[in-house]
Length: 411
Image (cartoon, rainbow, N blue to C red):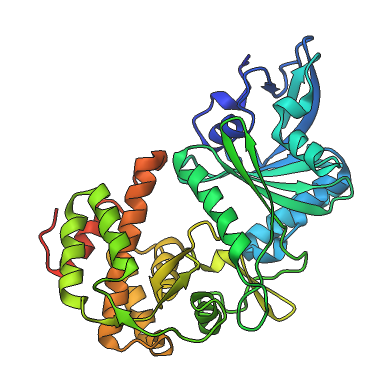
């Protein structure tokens, strides 16, 4: 049942997140002045921070301690302005005074004869864990690539887990891939970064949920977030071991994988990949693993060590330097506001400055850049085919850049 203030009826960020997490139609969601119907009983309340129209966060109001913890946890990872805003909200939550900020309160209620653990994901996860868990929920703009994430706290305000939620084909595949990656990563220290542990995998209706260990409480942003962590990237690529023997691109598992995926995607990427293989087929390449989303917002520092999270895009049989290329491209695209051509230029520059550490000469840097752009296009196409929709930033501009760099016709 729905009412005028049920956020699930909205088409913005708070709408798609509440539809994903509180999708059972038996749940009642509402805000004042709508009263909870007599057929239901309230189970959980959230402050909508800072307002429904500009929602960024659902703050659990289970207790002052939980409210403060859910706002202040990992604040050192956030940019200064966001950090200051979260600190102010956290102080209000700790004082039980969120009402002073006039933030609306969202109530979630279940039928009076229903078991909350059967209808509410956080209640279900708490039952599995053997303790009550309270979910703090971030709000992002509607995007079929995005995954709702629950940051789970116990009654004392201690972070217990992150629950990453796959809600369509594309995001279900992503959260499952992260679970596979976290099981297999080495944890021997050295240059290999610290990595959260996999706690559990849960199926909840049509949602795929991966539970990941919380980060260390005192994790901080890297002092120089745009500076490549070359030693750690190499340790990830080589799984902490020695270099592997370079092998020709032609006949490699990497090229076979790209070829099969390009055939499925179809279109101009097939010609772009053929041009890349013709130009670099005989090039010796050191292949290894990659994180798959090595960007400043997935990195932290704790007790002098690098901490890296979000491994949902990791994989094997990738050319060394792929994580370096990804950092250069995505940092320019997302943080620098560059278009695809500009982001490609930033990536090429970063490879030129640091490629030698990965055994790359100038021609090798060119190969890694172009191979990465093919990989990125295929990932974009696969997300779209999985229900993720096309990225407006990348489609079709990325195809144009590939055509220009590889000398194939523009689509």
